[in-house]
Length: 222
Image (cartoon, rainbow, N blue to C red; front, side):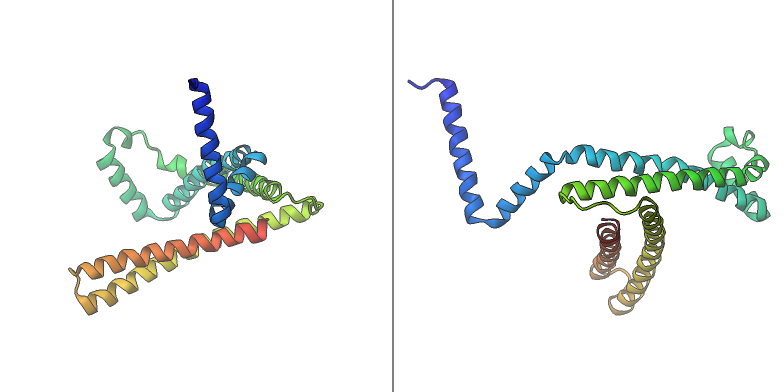
């Protein structure tokens, strides 16, 4: 009588045989399995962690930049400052008396410089980690580019990604507004087809922007 270990080994052998059969019959399955193995052999989890570290680190410089933008707004626009004070008083009545808008306006330059420097460091670090990850995944053995050339390319990539992101938001908004007007004119505002078409247009615009950013990262950074 077969032992439990022998039964488990037999089941595993049959499963491996079935998988190998699928790999021969279906190239897509074979491609998927080889992709997963490449990812594991090249320590894909660690490479992804390195990129994620710098990407998460950029969150804090963005907060500093947001603080700086708020400082410039309250320093240059009296109506905006009054509207902000009213909004804080309505939403957070306990904090409104402690919020010193004059101090925020006075710290705008320092916060902006710190935010820009921090964002530059985190962005360049993320792109450098991404380039290293792409080279390792592709098993690229060619000599890397000059340090200064690489940093200039990374800086250009950051600018292109920022412009692409801002443009994608604008294009998505315009596409959604235009689609909304067209569908409302043709089918009426309460039409189910108009609602689905509007959502589909927004999703399509977002996917197009994501695909463009992916091409920039893969083609320019890699």
